[in-house]
Every structure is written in structure tokens, then in C-alpha cells.
Image (tube, rainbow, N blue to C red):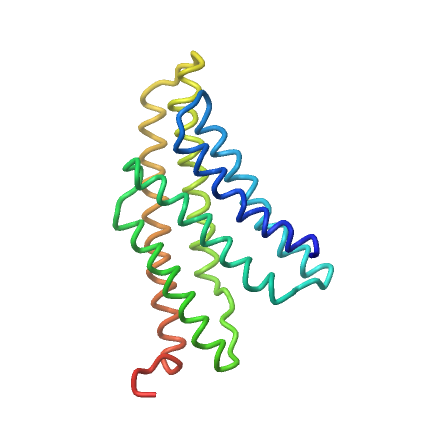
Length: 194
């Protein structure tokens, strides 16, 4: 197994570690969750670049890389939803779009067509990742650092919460927009009459 695939596999294995860090309360558990999520996100940026630069793109990598991304994002969103940190509408928009695009890719792959990541999809991913990292860092500041005796004014927390809501809603709207764009572009491939 080449290095890019090992990094992708490591990202999948980091998901249960992230969930454990997030869900099991211990001193600094949100900080640990944020750290694991950040490391997993870095592997996402590195594995693709390495695979391209080293000409080590494999079918295993093509299969596992997008799956690893979705598992990480859905697991993180699910943890935040459980704690009522995000709106259910945002959660459903992002998760349903991920399933829809995955199913669409399977259908068109059977016809020999590759569905590349579009600009809106990349922008959506960027906003989603910014929102998730910010949410985890916020939780760490709010609960972990407070437990260590560090006090942050409430107005700072309020500002971060407003920022989070704005970024999550932008991510959700971009998710909806990019999902519609995919459906329109590949409508002939999923025509119910064909």
C-alpha cells in the first residue's frame, strides 16, 4: 500500500478516535477532538497531492478518499447535532447532498463518466471544514479552557456563535446549490425514462 493510501486509511481510523474524544467527557476532551479532526483534515489535503505528484493514483484511493471525507464530515456533524450545536436543517442538507452525489457518481461511473469535484463543491467543502474546525475550537475554549481557569468574556463567545451560524448556513446554501448543479448537469444520466 502506497503512502497516499495509508494516509487516507489513517483518516478513516481517526474517525472513531475523534468520536471517542468528543463524546466521552474528560479534561480537555473537546481540545483532543479538535486536534484529531484537524490532523484528519490535513491528511485529506496531503494524500491527494502526494498521489498526484508521485503518480500513485489507485482505484483503492479513488474509492476510499471520498468515502473517508464523507465519514469524517458526517461523524463530526452528527456529534454537533447530538449536542444541538447545529441546526437540523443544516445537518440534513449537507448529509443528504453527500449521499445524493455519491449515488450519482455510482450511476454515471457505470456509464464510463467520471464526476469531478466542481468549484461549488470545493467551496462548500471549504466552508463546511471552516465551520467544523471553528465549532470544535469554540467548544474547547468554552469548556476545556474554562475548566483550566481561563476566563473568556461572554461577548467573545456570542460573537463566535454568530460567526458559526453564518458560516454553517453559507455551507448549507452552497451545499444545496452545488447539489442542484450536479443534478442539472447529469440529469440525462438519471432520467427516469431512460
